[in-house]
Image (tube, rainbow, N blue to C red; front, side, top):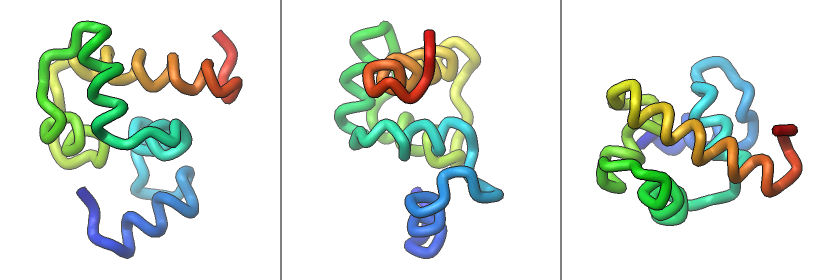
Length: 86
């Protein structure tokens, strides 16, 4: 989680310095952590919502497989919203 000023900056400017690509995709997705976690879990993710939240906000790394599942989950959501092409 970020402090309120970082959260504000990330929400207003997802491409701002210090905002990771994963956090930027999360912001653009419009999902809450619980919604993201459910989608992630359905795709085979194995960490809990707290660990996912920490990863999304660049506070804790996940192993490569779990990070790839998070990225895939976010990519699917952005495709649903027509924000990226397959």
